[in-house]
Image (tube, rainbow, N blue to C red; front, side, top):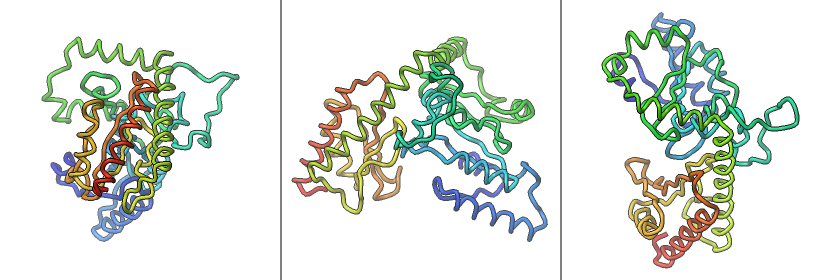
Length: 310
């Protein structure tokens, strides 16, 4: 959005992860173009920018449908894999779904699951890296890779264009050698059996957290006004509990701060009424730590409920 605002082009929004809304916006653009006599050329004038995994809700974009719609409308797609790199890949596409048991499985040769080559992102998990409407993907190194910087994966033509015309690249200092070594080491781990083991553990902890919290909340009878569930529907390690109201969200996190690093995400960072406690689960966490967090969250919610703050 910010990058688009610096151009002379029109920037339009579609509803979050809503393909029908995207179709409507694209159709409106085409109608406006016909009226003005400036029909967009194939893959030239319309760019759709999305993230593979969203940082606030932890949900995954419907990339297959978005790319297919783009292909049918002559648009190109840019995918930000900031929160997909290291977490998703060819070896764990089923972890893109909350209901892991009913997730579609990748058909593999032989009888064993692969234990290497995963972790390169959601596009790889869905086998979409060569989709005709994908202009490029952006892989940042400040999350799972534990460093800084980013790389753009694209065609040679796109890369050459960016090298010559992208001002942030042209006028930026090159990354130092130690950063490149760190990134290389991170990729070696991500793509290895070690990375695969960590992902398996990580998503086991995600499922443990969601099930344990849901079960305990149901047993205690805690209710959040106007919500069927506190947990947002996220299959990723980014989990969020909707706790409407800045003050109560702060209070809840304060009660946990002596044991856990959990932070309130308040309005206006998120819309009013959508305040939440944002939780990131890591592969170095243990099952005991996850269950302690669940206990702490529920105990704090019960205490706030008794004070009539919920």
